[in-house]
Image (cartoon, rainbow, N blue to C red; front, side, top):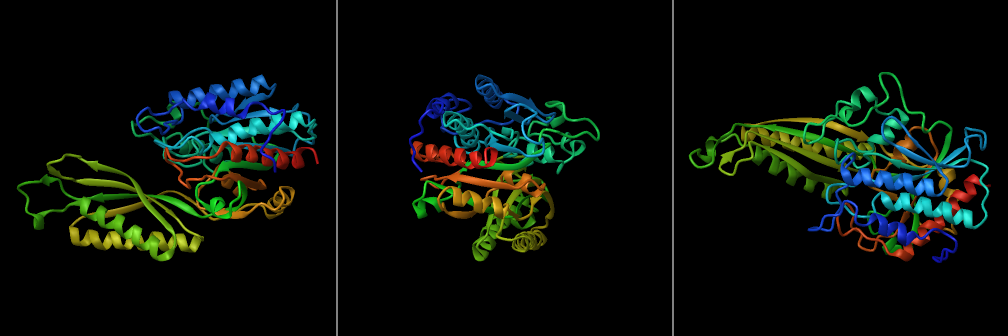
Length: 407
């Protein structure tokens, strides 16, 4: 694949337009949480970019966006093709996770048009909302709502760290109603920056994902007794921070021993005073494994060690799964056809969750392309991608979509 893209809209210009939106001056990372100012600015950019290309923009009741190429009557109505990704970020995240897929989708349509492609099926560019779960705590929330995997009656009660309910910031679909945005979508192809070093090791700019490891988020509520940090003897304490600390170390050890992934990345301490033994610690475990059985074993092992330690510390532990996604295998026929069309690019699994996994689980044949990340770092300001590799990704996406909408 050549990284020279003639006739396509200026990819670098689109990327420059997005670069300052939501960027922290101190860390260089991005804060693009759903329905806050930066993410709203990106949504406006999406609409303007689509309108400038004559694409029809649709928004469902949950805030998901799709820009459609071609009239509604194009094709059979049940053979639509969807591409895209998301625009939100984790807290202090990288520039590429999500937006690269959206920008590349617009650039791919530009490239297809410059090649004279006349689609026989309607093609949509999606921007799913709250993919990261960084505001309302549920990963891939927009796509889950779009396919009906999560009900609005449940989702509207989700609250952010300030206590704001999702139902207070977005209208939703009403009781019993659902999104119709994905009606007729027969195929979904998502492009994403790689969140690891697989392509670096293989010296390849673009690859295809075979599937997604099962993963989940688990809330640990550890209760103890508040006390004075100076006057309370160590042996008289019921300190939930000790239980948490041992649990975090146990998670690391269990994941290392089994070759899986376990991370405590968020913690809330009450009363959060320097000179007080805490009364309560809430911590969130992100666990991922190569199979559903391996994930269940990992989570069970960490919980057992937490409960055992709590018995010694005089504390209690309650574990609540907040979201769990099983193993996802992307559509094999679609994957193989993309690999052949792209000249035999590498095929690798991913340990990261994506909207693509939600759509595949909902019965929509799905594939994922990914672009080399030279640092291998993601969910961080150090996430990166070279322009030449991004352009190779655009060309690969355009080739893949052309085979689907103009066979």
